[in-house]
Length: 123
Image (cartoon, rainbow, N blue to C red; front, side, top):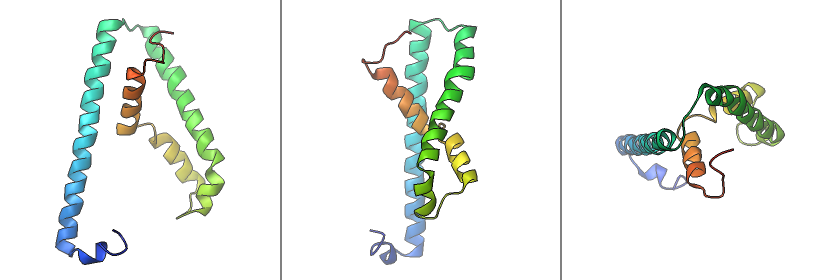
């Protein structure tokens, strides 16, 4: 489509198509956030009682460990990423590591974990 189709779309149409796809992406992300809030919130309220120690474990345990794992994987593939495409500097690698656990991707991962029967509910 990019090779031959993009040149056949007029500038006005391309602008409209860009807006339509942007809106579809916005709706999809909003839907993921709403579903995650409803499902995870309902389970947190009905099944368990969260305490201060749980929040501390999350903030000072799980969250930093996830960033370290993501940074390690990104660092492992950095030589390949630096030579492919536009290249990747170390600053961009750090930014990609930090920004990767936010948004709809992180929420969809939380939803996938919450519905997986193989993962124990309580540790």
